[in-house]
Every structure is written in structure tokens, then in C-alpha cells.
View 1 (spheres, helix red, strand yellow):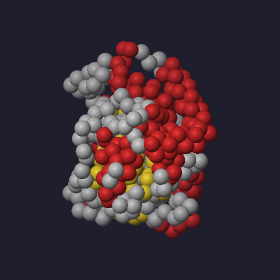
View 2 (cartoon, one colour; view 1 turned 30 degrees about the vertical axis):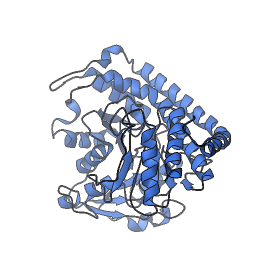
View 3 (tube, rainbow, N blue to C red; view 1 turned 60 degrees about the horizontal axis):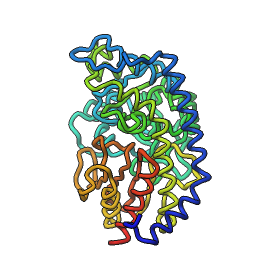
View 4 (tube, helix red, strand yellow; view 1 turned 90 degrees about the vertical axis):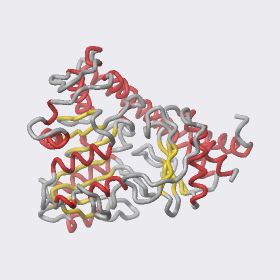
Length: 413
């Protein structure tokens, strides 16, 4: 600890004292989720036979079929695609949109503007070859209000051709609160009252295992996310998932591969043990990340910065937003965090243009799996109010040290 200034160490001590009451709740959720995972593994008779890799077409890939059945069960859903062939969460989300929506349909976002990479998929505010807009799929969005989704205006926004509503659980690059499972349940029920046939689609990135239920268990028709976030437990080397109602997941599968092929093919080119073991570890690993986020909320509040969520807030994702107020502090934060990463600690990240993002972005990610945001990482666009989004942490201890490293770099500016 000698590498940190005395004032940083003193604030660390105060922060650890203040966060203790909130950590018990996180541990209780992790224990409940671990029991659920163990029961599901037992129910589906997971065996080391399912850990082998396959090649070629991979017809009847037992490991692939087993982990998809397990994930569907854990999510309270009928069917799942859990594949390393998905390159990111955005890829999985886009597969759902292109698999289900048709020319003339409308997609309505109930949570305002979606995450930057999804905006290029939609093609609403930027020109992107192959976007939904180019295929004649309409898009509209309902701006959020201070209390969350403007539920009273949903009915007025839905049109006869509104085939799907998009609900983004996490905050994206904004300071709004993530949606809780209870709020998602209420939203889905409200949409179904207006139009029982409208599909409720949840972007579940960063939210898995933060609560004891997933959106598809409380009314969402389909959802998608990334395996190098929460459900991969820090072990899945790549991939994403889609889970929900059988007919909707099948439509997405035809987009993932080809019509008539769907989910029948797709080789397990990596050791399936990593996916099973990562899923087993996910409850604990996600809890470590949530604890780190709560610590960062208190720690940076004590340093005088605006943080969201507040420590006492009910968590629904692993992200901690910290409003830094200047581009220089945003850069320093990421450079300080990188310095205390296990990989590429000698590298100093700099802002740059990144495909799918509208603004120059800086990212700190000294991770074992490239870009894995269940590992301790931070990023943010260089736009006012210069907010950094801190997420992940395979261990609570690393999250504490990384936060101190970021704060020290700002202090030394």
C-alpha cells in the first residue's frame, strides 16, 4: 500500500467502513444464485462428457445442447442460444432484431437512446450500411424521465406496426438508473395490456446474476447479452447468448446461421468446460463486481464526485458511473486504473475512435480476456459531463486497488 498517498488510504478506510452494511445483501443474492445454478446443473445431469470440443458442422454437439438447456432453465425461458460464434453482446442483440423484425415493422425503445453500438445497428442517428433502417424497419424512442421510463406515454408511442419494444436494462453511456427486475416486470405487463402481440426484448448486458431472477422469468419475451460480461464468470473466452420464447429464439437462430439450419450447427471450438465453469462461477464473480461498484460509489463520493448509483440503491447491473467533470480527469482515471491491471499494466490508454461509437472513447482494460467487462475495466466517451463507467472486478480486492490507482492518477495531475 506504500504506493498510494496517505489521503487516498484514509478515504479507502472510511469507504470500507461505510460499505459494510450493503455487502451482506450482495452476498445473500450470490448464495441464492449459486444454489439455483447447482440445482440446475444437477437437474440437467451436467458431466465432464459435455466439456469436449467439436469441429465441422457439429451436429448433435452434446455440450452445446446441454449448456443451452441449462441457461434457458436458469433464465426461466423455453430456449437459448449460447454460442462462442457471437463476437459480442451487440452481435447477439442485432441477431435478435434482424431475425424477428421485417420491413415495415417498428422497433420502439422504451428506455431512450440505446447504447452507442446499438445505434449503428438501428441506423437511426447515423449512416451505417446494413442497418435496420436500410432494411425498411422503422424506429422510435421514448425519452426517459427522472423517475425512469415514462410509462404513461407508452400507449401513445405504440403504433399498429410496433412489433417490438426494446428495454435496455443497464445505463449505457448515461447517468440514469438501471432498470430493476421489478420495473422490467411492470413494463412488460404494461406493454402486453396495450398489445398482447408486441414482443418485449431486453438488452440484459451487465445485469445477469445481479438479482435472483432474469427478465425472461418476469415477462420479457426474449433477451440477449454477452458471455465476456457477467454470465461467463471471467472464464468464457468469447461469445454471447439469446434466450426466451422458443419461436422467437428459433427466428434469431435462422439469422445467426441460415434459414433451415438455425441452431442445429455450430462447433464448440473452445473447451466447453470454460463455459460451464464460467456459468458456475458467475454468481460469485458478479457479486465481486457489484461489491467493487458499491465501494467505488462511496470512495469517489468522499473525493467529491457525483456517483450513480448511490451505495444504498438497489443494484441491477455491475456499472458504477462517476462524473469527473473534465476530459483530463477522465483520461487520468483510465490510465490510473490500467496501471493496476494484471495485464498490460505498462500501457497508458489514450482516447481514440472506436467502431460503433459516436464519440472518441477512452478505455482501460488490462484484462485476461480482451475487452471482458466482468474483469475490472473502465471506459467513457469524451463528451460532457465526462463520466467514466467503471465495471467488473474478478475480486473485490482488485476493485478496491484499481479505484485507488485511478484516484491517485487524478490527484497527481
